[in-house]
Amino acid sequence: MTNVRSLSSSPALATPPGAPVASAHRQRLRAVAPDEVPPVAELLHPGATWLPAPPHTLPALPGHPPMVGYLVLVPADRQDPAASAAAPSPSTAAVTAGGGDGLVRIDPDHRTAQIAGRPLELTYLEFELLAHLVAHPHRVHTRDQLVTTVWGYGHVGDGRTVDVHVARLRRKLGAEHRGTIVTVRRVGYKYAPPAPPAPTG
Image (cartoon, rainbow, N blue to C red; front, top):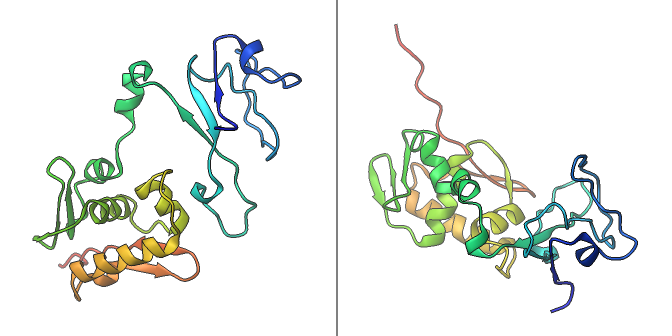
């Protein structure tokens, strides 16, 4: 495979000739040109493999230039357990935020979801999509962002895949609650939970 790079502990072996070497004591974020090879040798675990991410897997933000991304592959036996435990899945994030919002309840351990107390029969991807939307209420997600987050980098498809799954989710939520998944024209979707009732008295 082309453009696949394995990193070693020696910057001279991992960094292409002429590329600047990042200082271990002074690291700064900066833009990377599409044809530039970033000096990542000292930033990643020795033995990690990195390669350019396919363009269709990167989110496209309206009004912003195209993004350049890289995939970093680390052997499972070298992964930092603390870093792995610190990154909750979308469904776990929903539970951390309170298990839902009173209307939608997400249980990531049993992979179940309820709407107003009624169990939902969801496929794997429908569950992941709903859990991700509920975990970020009122946040607008582009179709590309949802494909990358829910389907993953290896998915080959387009925004129509998201449209199909959103339509199925809305049918399963029912006529009373289908409007909680809102279409943002020419952008994507967001989850808009109902406002809590105003206090009386």
